[in-house]
Length: 169
Image 1 (cartoon, helix red, strand yellow):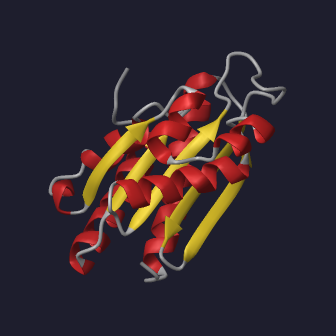
Image 2 (cartoon, rainbow, N blue to C red):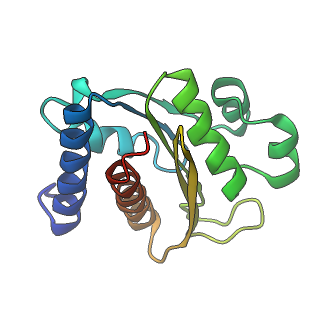
């Protein structure tokens, strides 16, 4: 499998733009991932010079880790499950605070192969948090596990790039 496919090029380009903008502004980003399992962090750190803007990542795959590592309220997790817009927002806010970054980005959802928490495969929530507020996008993605995860990274990078360009960090 080649990593030079068109989907990789789009992700690499978006990640590159984010790192360049953040570095120029002396701003930073931290990420909290669930279904993407580190793919978002890998995309950002694939950019030369990323260390100037990338603070780190928390891969909180287990629901309990979302509470202990990212400060997602346990009552929220108990009531909504891990796959909800509110949890995505709390993850982004938690990683931004915990890792002391200008921006926090988060992914949570169902990559498959089976539904989870009564939600179908392809149900995804991405969020980006900054001092001026948190934005969440809910996605319904088609495809297999790898495609859902890849499209999730594309979506959160797009949202992050948009928020960085707003200069609200």
